[in-house]
Image (cartoon, rainbow over all chains, first blue to last red; front, side):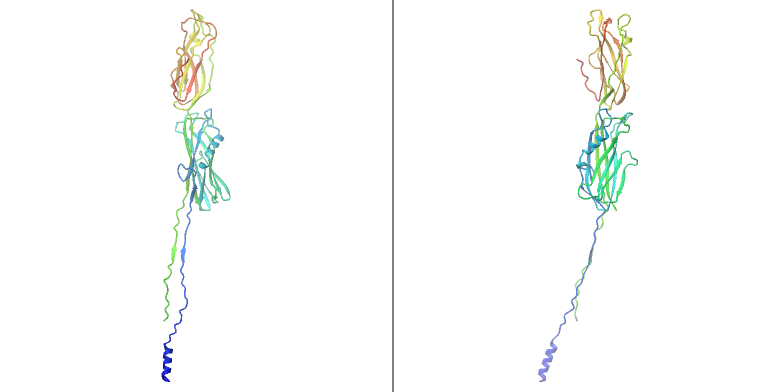
Length: 197
Length: 178
C-alpha cells in the first residue's frame, strides 16, 4: 500500500505546472518633421530673355510722321500687343504674403542728344498681381528717383491661371516736341517676386 | 523563474527635413524699338521774286539776282544726313534771236547746320552732296554768280527757275536732270 502511495506522490510531484507569462507590448515612437521653405516658384515663365520669367516687347517704330514720339496710347497698345506669352506669368509662393519689386528702365539709344532732339523715352510700367481677395498693381516710372518700387501685399498669390501681368503707359520724351534721334532703342522692366511672412 | 524577454526596443527615429533658404523669382521684360533716319522740311518752300533783272543798258544786272535769298526750315535725325541742291536757269519762253538772251544762270547755295551745298544752273543736274549731319533749324538758300549766256540784252517777260534743296537721311546718288 505504501508503495502505491509513493508512486502517486512521485507522479504528483513530477507534475510541473507552468504558469503562462503575463501579456506585454512595447511601443516606439517615430517623430517625423518636415518643412516647406519660404519660396516663390515659376510655373509659367512666359518667354524670358533672362531670369526666371519674362518676355520681349518690340514697339516697332517710335516716331510719328513729324519725327516726334508717337502718341502714348498708341505705344501702350503696341506694348500690350506683345501678348500673353510675353507679358503674363504664373508664380506660386508658399508664404501668406507676397513681396513685389518693379524697376522700369527707360528706352535709350546710344546717339548723343542735342537740343531739340531726344534719345530717351520715359514710361510707366505696371505689374499686376492676382491675389487671393483681389488684384493689386505696383507701378514704377522710369523717371522716379530713387529708381524702383517695392511693396509687400498681405495676401497670397491666387492659384490657377496666370497671376502676374505687365503693362506700360505714359510714354514720353524729355521735351514734348523733341524730334526722335535715329537709332535702335532698348530698355527693360525688372520684376522680383519674393515670399513674405 | 519566469523570464520576460524584452524584445529589442524600437529605436526612436526622428526624421527631420532641414528647411531650405527663402527663394524669390526674378523676371525681365525687355523692350526694343527703333527710329529710322529721316529728314523733314517744316518750312518746305519759299519764293524769291526779282522784279527787274536788267540794268539801264538792258543787260543783266547781276546785283538784282546775287544775294537774293529765302529761308526754309527742317531737320534730320541722323548723323549721316546729306544735303544737295539742284538749280535750274531762270528761263524766258520767248525766242531770243541773235541779239538777246532769254536765260540767266546763277549759283544757288543752301546753308544748314553751318554746312553749305550748292549748284550752278549752268550744269544740268544737282550739285554734290554735303554731309549736313544731325540738325534742326533753318535752311537758307542764297543766289550768286548770276550771268547771261552772251551778256546780251535780256528778252523781256517773266523768267522762272527752281532751286530744289534735298535733305536725305544718308548719301544717295544724285538724280540726273533730264
